[in-house]
Image 1 (tube, rainbow, N blue to C red):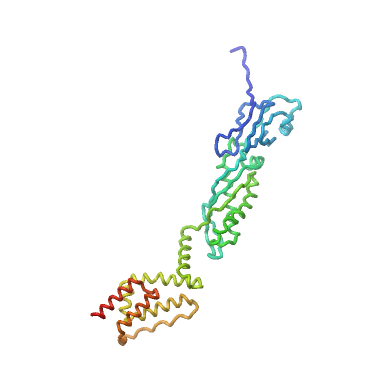
Image 2 (spheres, one colour):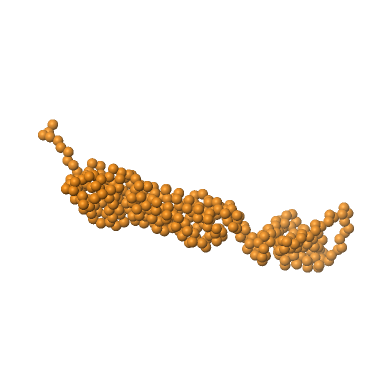
Length: 351
């Protein structure tokens, strides 16, 4: 063995945090077996706060600046350790740095649609997306409620907690807003302000300040959006009717006409088979009349044809062509059907 052995204590003269890693909100200075030299220097940069913790209890908090560590500048820690006023030896304590920079551009969204009541659609499910920003404002609460004694506490760690708070507040605000879905796009700023008030209060319990919050979009699930698109289309195509349901009925009738034209023989076959197209005009006229006047009594159903009907009075081809043109002008048949039937009638006329 040598002459002897000794343990050389290692002292820390300067404590500081350079924030090399992005997204870290809380960082514990690596003490290990080091001790802080009495009279050492603590450097706290702008957008930082340093906290001394003794045996799990917060002792002293230091804001931005350069601080010389003595028993005079560490009054609470000195009291906890019962140091003598003349104490001048090194000491050991956990030191945590907190970043108070604003964490900008954080995205939020509803992973699952939120079911709410709507005055236009009764019950609907909506999804919402947007962005928010926040920062640590009270390191005591942040340390006690969230970060604790971890060596590092990151933005991802805290946002797992914030996300649940945010979605709960969003669901409550949407449910109580009484704003129809069709009006939400024009009221997104107002909605964001309402949600922000509740969120700010919830975040403050964890020592976090909500800096900004916005709602970028409110949307429906795909199947509900498809149904809404159909209703909007019906409203546009049936806009001449003051009554919404009448407009929608007109749209349904208009949609059925191409289907009829696509059947075997089409409208041309129907017009030729019925003699003069008179029945087609009656059927279409009754359907459109019901669309425009949904409250009117429906026309009586035509009586069943007798077993051996008498041959209808022959109508001239000129009259049939005139009625066919009237059907086209009213939009009850397509130009293609008109041309086909006209050609067939003219063929009969010319021979």
